[in-house]
Image (cartoon, rainbow, N blue to C red):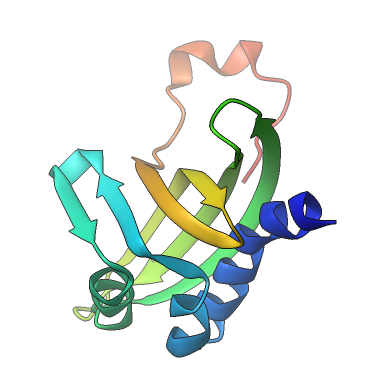
Amino acid sequence: MKYDSDQELPMQMWRHFKAKEWDLAQNLLSEDFRAYWPQSNETFSGPQNFIEVNRIYPVTNVVEIIDSHHSYDQWEHLQKVTTGVYIHSKMPDGKEMKLYAILFFEVTDGKIASLKEYFADTYPAPEWRSHLVAEAIR
């Protein structure tokens, strides 16, 4: 069924990113694809630009997919897929960066049409609330 395969496209994109299979990842994006990174107020138009910014990104990433949710918008005829990921990056200067990201994908006609990606840095939990925490996740 088409809808099942559409909701799987973002997961396929993550697998291609992990393997650095940039051409295969680009094939999943529509010709009028747009990506938006709100933190830096950047919009990437076209699949080539989005794939290139990820290809040349100056870090080594390890991405762990935490979860994925989907719904079908019957009025707009598109799948909405949300993925949550944990990213551990090694910067060129040797520093490490650990963050979470949530991505909102829109998929239509067998291609990823758009995504909006939010990043959140990790930080140590404050001591003042430690007595209320059941367990640490990481």
